[in-house]
Image 1: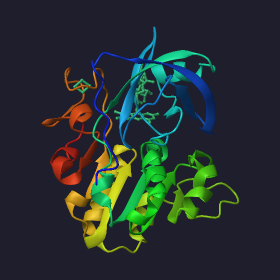
Image 2: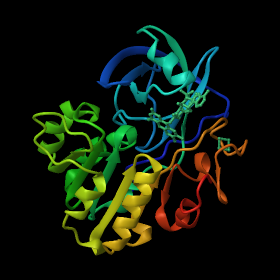
Image 3: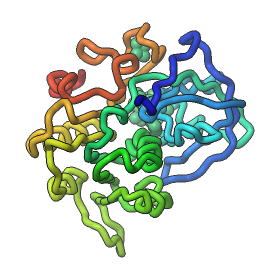
Image 4: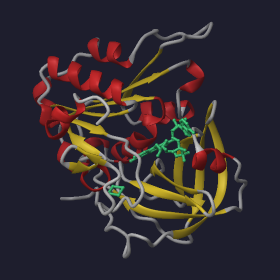
Length: 279
Ligand SMILES: Cc1cc2nc3c(=O)[nH]c(=O)nc-3n(C[C@H](O)[C@H](O)[C@H](O)COP(=O)(O)OP(=O)(O)OC[C@H]3O[C@@H](n4cnc5c(N)ncnc54)[C@H](O)[C@@H]3O)c2cc1C
Ligand code: FES
């Protein structure tokens, strides 16, 4: 049965839903989760994204980080440029437009009965968070679930307050940072080091990964070297976007458009293009 449904795309690609900022939760230096009230249910599947429009400023593609049935739509955003810095200046009550949901989600239905390794780097955990919550609620449908999280420093690890609930849902969480602070009890290094130390059966394991592109390339290569099939490795790509509807071509990546054909791709579809610099 298909339970992780993909919402139909908006009636018109240009139709943005008015939404009001309800609250802002700081997550890490420069990163916060913004919750929006759309005045009714907002259907999406984990891994999909919205175009977040700030009137008079511009729009940015942002993953939906809230649980699929949450009362508000959550976006976890790092302030890096025009739109995201303006977002960081908004206060509760401010109005925005959410255009979406867009894109192919994580293939959760296809992963039933399999072991799953989720690998996140930095703000990439935002795209995986709704999948983690959804899988946790249907935990009996999956085999072992392992979450590997990498960050620059301990303060950069997102959603740490939610880890106890995820552990109670029988999700094995391992964290690593490249710059450990005094008192950090975990290992120092890269998330690929965690993958290297993980025991898994490649025949019954699928890997979902979201983070900076060099990190995803390294994770995919490490997974392949450990025997995972390219069809069992899924990466969520980022490219600059404008329409998000497969119309303008801005997000072209090889023969695909990331907004329409992704952002989640199986590695076999994109491996030849990932190897090309600046594509
Ligand atoms: C499917 C998808 C999902 C995404 N999900 C998320 C998410 O959940 N959270 C999140 O935080 N991001 C996410 N992103 C990334 C986000 O869309 C981009 O970071 C977006 O560019 C931010 O928009 P902006 O206007 O704030 O930044 P922009 O102004 O577009 O700037 C983007 C980058 O360019 C640099 N830059 C900006 N101006 C200049 C300049 N004048 N000279 C040189 N460099 C400059 C900035 O430092 C920054 O690194 C996602 C992207 C995609 C495609
Ligand atoms: S953003 Fe226009 S085609 Fe993808």
